[in-house]
Length: 109
Length: 116
Image (cartoon, rainbow over all chains, first blue to last red):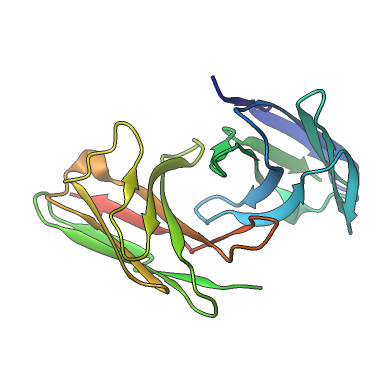
């Protein structure tokens, strides 16, 4: 079956670095997405990886290993506004997104 | 970036009434739009894929007669919750793709439905 696993909740300190992991099993693979979702709001796009390696975008970086079915989202210089849920989603061979349950990130001062 | 607008943001209705939620792509044409439902502290649940000019494709377990989806144009899809009941209270979100290589989805703001 198709499955996405990511931690339910993580806590980090303002100014620190946090890594949110995601493992996936899909029928075929057409890329891995990370979205940020603040409570009560719709998700916003953060990153897309389809090739192995690290992609950096400012304070956020995303890594993909296709052979391991593994991705992570790295957030640096954490700010209080980064408190949100981070959704990992993998696109299968039918170009359908399989969503993880999301990781709630709590930032403490 | 591309903008998807969803309306209304909040709606409260009485049990038994029907509610329509609109999803518009404001600056691009979206041949495909997606409708999701999200319960508190849970992930997005894909309800259906809306294709312009054809019938929507519903996910398993989603009642097509209860959740009517119409995609009349390349910029508008609507979700109608018919004969709403309190258990239909939820956060409904739409998304659309520009069809680029990244497959990036742009989400509407979401519509919070409360059925009394």
